[in-house]
Length: 312
Image (tube, rainbow, N blue to C red; front, side, top):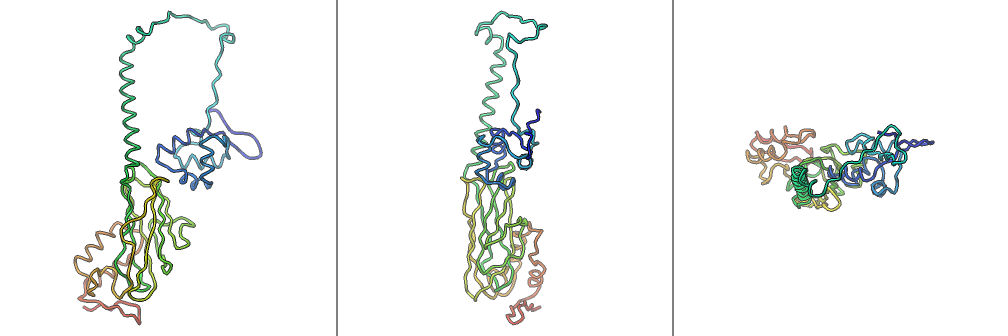
């Protein structure tokens, strides 16, 4: 690869915008994802792809290559190859003129290659159709799971399940807005710096097919007060969708796993907890407490001490 570095006070490289756009689209990445990875704006990514900025800082080029999973050299503009005209051919080269075949003779000689090329073309077109059709088929969904009730200032889990994304690595953005009276205790995956502020959790992650996001939160309020959640998920500007499923929780006097609020965690209820939350292994859901309540015959919430009193 020819070195396309530009000399000067700042190290620059000449990039091929068409290559960048092709690599990004093949991997199902958005301009927003690249902009976040390189720490520039989406307008800058657009200008790079449209060759309005043919030269960029080498540091930005390295970040861009890393985000696209290629080497920097793969993004550089190819140097044109000089061709010799007849007048400049070296003297020791002999120009031989061959008999020119007719179109019919060319076709007769190369008909197997023609058939093979046509077959390969059909296969490639079918693959392209399948890739773009599956990426935009409308099956992309995000669903939130929130317990029906909780206790004032006591933590409970929230899950967001994402399904229907392409089976290849795809960039996903989730924006989850939690109540003003809520406190976040843990997130899974851990959000990046700046991803938790203004009552909003932001995740940016590459996924394949499906993914699971979760967080532990507590809310403060009066008994019987309802608090709301909302959010969006997107794998491109055209695929942003609201997070469906549960969006309300009521404050009361019963543990969040006690779905029927009878002061007992039954076999069915603890099995539901394990079914829904067993995949979350990197945040504490206080499963030990749930098991203790399940092993007891009854429990009561003690408001004065803010603890559960378990009756054997």
